Length: 262
Length: 262
DNA sequence: CGTTCCCTTGACAAATCTCAATAATCGTGG
DNA sequence: CCACGATTATTGAGATTTGTCAAGGGAACG
Image (cartoon, rainbow over all chains, first blue to last red; front, side):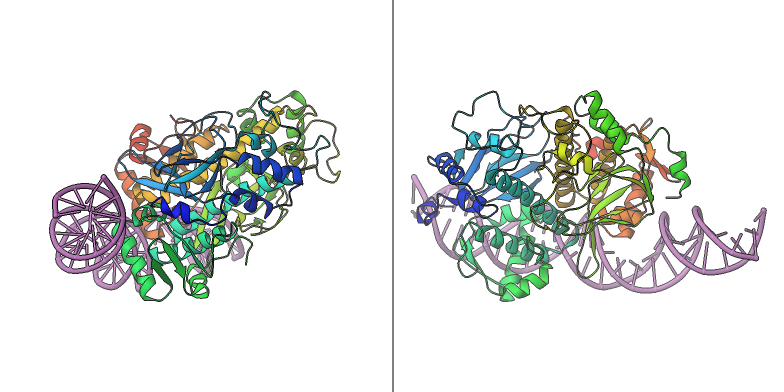
């Protein structure tokens, strides 16, 4: 997670735009709104808490660079990472009627974050008191037809639910080996959507401890499982990047369905 | 799951109304709409598939009586129950832009179901082609303020996400013993919201196999874990009902936070 | 260079699973 | 009301997977 990994990142700042326009065609002014929102990213260090657990009105944010997660801690210190957040992902976009224990959100690596309150109006949340400010870009049109941005945000929300379901299946019914394979395939698919994958190779900036907390395993077992995958020629790790050497085999091992029922 | 258990059920048909009005105050005409929707429940047997996996436009439905689940099957036959659905829960309320592998929805017991397309307009989905038919009860008001029904449906959606997160934590970081305790507490809380709990006792109409598939355990281990809970005086099972004998202990064992950060 | 963090190993313990029977229950037809 | 077949709950024994503890090695960093 050295900071240089951020410097190294290629044409990165439009992760969110790329992501959302992949879900639904955006009108020019919607794209412009997005660009405006993501214009001034703030750099935060790893392990920064972005949303506290049970917060009723989390500040809407966009993750532009770096990895984060939604997590929940048990009283005795055990940690479960509920979902990993990648560049282009949205955080805390929905206002809640009351605080719910969704877990906290924290960065896993240094990250670039943008305030994204301007998207809330478009997300379908109820109109905020009047803090929107800028023009007429967001939200449903008065006629009730859904705008491209609203559709994209809705799709983004649905994808997050898919990832949650995937996580449940991994944790509930797959072996350590299968879990890792499945998780890596999901990461590859998600990162590809923001153009961060080349020939099945992508940056993989998290420690095995984090991975273990995401996949419900101990660090030691996580380590041994990764070694096994390497020995089997399925993956290759170098520094902070990983290559999926044999995607078909991984898909078969993990029983991976992809986001669109592939 | 005998049919008599349905006959036995008390003033039951308004599970959905009770549930939703607990989330947000409903206008009289909204309550009326709900009553109208749930007026003619259809009785379906156990193991009926209500939504197929990857269905793009599932028929919106309300579960009024009986239990169901969202589940995902692996190629080799393993099954993971993603979330259990209880009376008052909504199914397939959101239209999707494209089919996503959310898993299929199936009844676990005989159940009473109602078609609920009329709620879709109120759910915040885009306006359907004109099939709504009845008056002006649903949806956002033209001014953009959220109606009570829309708020309640949004809350219901958020609750479902909470249950998913709970499920992830259970499966990822809790022991069998803790998982069962946690799951039972969640059931109690959810059933209480539709008035199906008396003195910590509620109907528990599922087999240990189903429970095992929900909690990511084998049937045998599930059985032994239940026995342990009984021996420890934490629960008591009689026929198809269960009593939580010692809620505080269960809460402590499961590190249970409740829906509102209790 | 000395810390610190992370990855790796070995040895052993604990949790959980599988297989294979055996009891209990339930629903049904007589 | 009873016998029968099917489903569900329970047990025992032994195999696997996964976790815990403790320690060593290597790379990054001030």
